[in-house]
Image 1 (cartoon, rainbow, N blue to C red):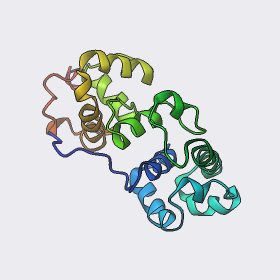
Image 2 (cartoon, one colour):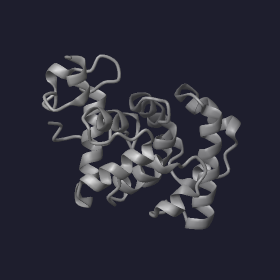
Image 3 (tube, rainbow, N blue to C red):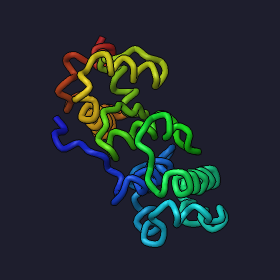
Image 4 (cartoon, one colour):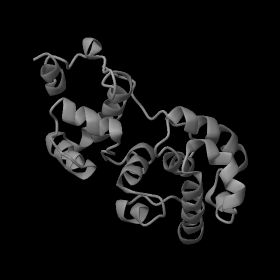
Length: 196
């Protein structure tokens, strides 16, 4: 099930991944890819964004929502990466979390997808699927992440994340999950509760 699950954001560098993930908050990957296809033709390095004016960036990212905050965070994070890290996105949780607009989920995506460092980013899909199929009863992303890390070996965290995202996006949807197409439906707490 989902053997080819992978990040669906389009990017050519870890920095482009960072920008795309910041833009993806409360937005679909499809919409972000439409935005970044054009954006990255002109701006694709921290130095390109570092001294941009948010008023110049906003029209380019407007359709992703929360564009003013996202633009400010991208510019501020770019400036730090350019000045402090010589245009290289840091590869530690602590340094990533210090960047504007970067929370635990975004930092975990950069570590996992960008650097191949084992991490379990908990987005809405991971949170929902983990709770529905009984991998966690956590009420916060941090709790779900902790539960998943205790259940699975570190070497499997990145694959697990991709699987759970894909499963949540295409099968275990928030509205109208496709339980009839799910190989986990016999063990799924959510499905069992529906059939009672």
